[in-house]
Length: 638
Image 1 (spheres, rainbow, N blue to C red):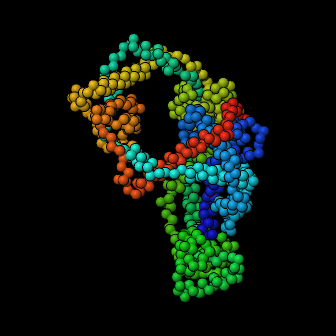
Image 2: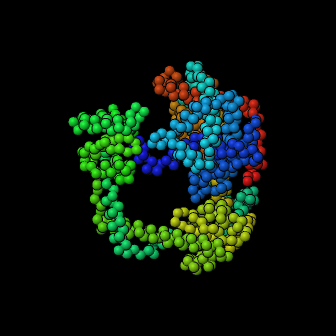
Image 3: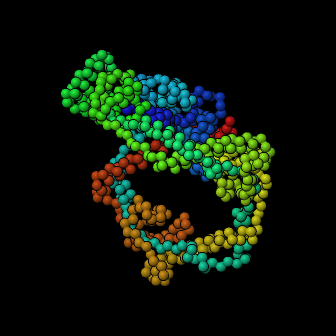
């Protein structure tokens, strides 16, 4: 119990609650908050069920926030559409609704008593004396749920679990299937390949004006200059404020005294205890009597750890000899802490009564460390004070900038009031700029309707911590077609790259044609002056070779007695061309596997079989519960 109390003191309770609720929302999404809303539009219907517009919007926003968190400052809102997030969210919610409908149709449901027992035993709702209703209600209120809606969501979650478990458990694997899979998955192949890189052929490319002009005209739209904006901007950097902060010796000395006072209160004590709690069979008086008896046995020389394991009602420490580890003041409840911090190492004390019961205490060690001298800490204290003063000055200037940028028609007055210099960077497009103007948030602000079209100052932006920026568009440069002379260098590089890639492809095809005609590898090597690379016993699990090469090697049919080799040409994502030869295929041997490998293989096949079965099951559900999607409601969110 005391261990639990100490954990709560560290502030982890909040995220434990959120973590638990995610388990429910993972299946039911934020639509669990909208069980009884029937008037709003639906983005999809599944049989009699529906996926509401607000449910879809909430889950879409959650996915967007996750994406933004992953990409940080480089996040581009367009990624949401580019990655197909809206469609994926919709299909996920439809699948959830399908499974819920199927579970309900099958009569699956968690018994009310069992559901209540599960909820009341969830760790995040426990207090020191068991289920804490106030904590339970507070946790639900923090995410906008009621006990009733949470109970409904949990019940639906459990019924879907029953359904999916039933489908998974219906899959089974035969020995024949296992051996057949082993021959395929554990198959190994002998291959050789020749690599031809486009860079090898760049010297053979001839660039002339006629060819370059034709190349450019065929791709003119790709070289179109996008719409750009020219802005003026003001920036506040916290580091600039640090240089202006003068910290006196008196301030540093005062900081040292504060550090010293705080440091002296950080004494750590290592202790152990035996807790005797009140139970149905033992009241407080009986617990006190037992504590006095145990204390006498300890003073007579019996082992503390043995008695703690036998009698202590604190599950967090009983099995560890009653040890509580080290703790500073403010960790334990009042009577316990008062006793502990008045003891000397080796002392036993008891009975000590708290709201948890009766304790016997043992103090093992007292840990104190010496505070470094003023001279040793002066530099770091001065820098800390400088940073704190700069933070305060930065926050004050930022607040003033926010007001001025909102109230004035341009940035001249804010610049004069704050002593800032107006910056005028090179024009940039929505797709990119330089420095802070390459940041997605800054570019989005510059191209917003309020700033670009209506001429307002932007709100104060923070491209990174400690940097505040406000900007104003002073010119919009329309998109336009560029001439060849303007982009000649870029066009030339692309022309050479494309031409050399074609030459590499032609060379690879020529080698392939020679092999098909019966030319030996040795003859080709001599003629081309190139070296073939060999790999014997290639497995499907190989991660060292390029995936495209490995996959191509396993797509080829095994050689026959008439055709002693199989050949193919592979293009890598880098543009390199590989000429591939397959010379031998050996099936995997199930009997050669260890018991551990056989178990792993069986698990792989079972997982694959379950996936296939579940896909078929979902297809059947889609026929039983017709799905209708309303994509117009996806785009017309409230």
